[in-house]
Image (cartoon, rainbow, N blue to C red; front, top):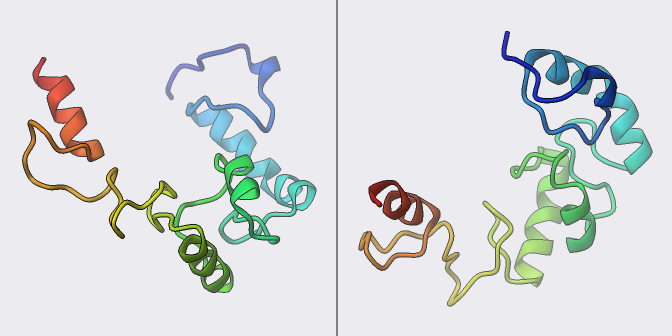
Length: 120
């Protein structure tokens, strides 16, 4: 079991610790969390889809919505020119964070930025 990064008495639905104990607590509270925040039980996306609600619930939803939420999610992302993978803003219909130019020295995608940091 992974060591907990905080006192167990501090653990609530905003806990970001990934130890086994905290993950079990989160799973046990899932039904209450989604009911209280108006989220989909299957994927954690907000039932009333908006950019603001997606941002507020980003620690609860999975970035890929379930079948029931998918159509609304895709429409919202298209309306606001946002990436369906990471919810970042699109530039020329491409997500700079997800689209790799394969030029590690200048590419701004997450993988290339990480590679540059790892090299230094």
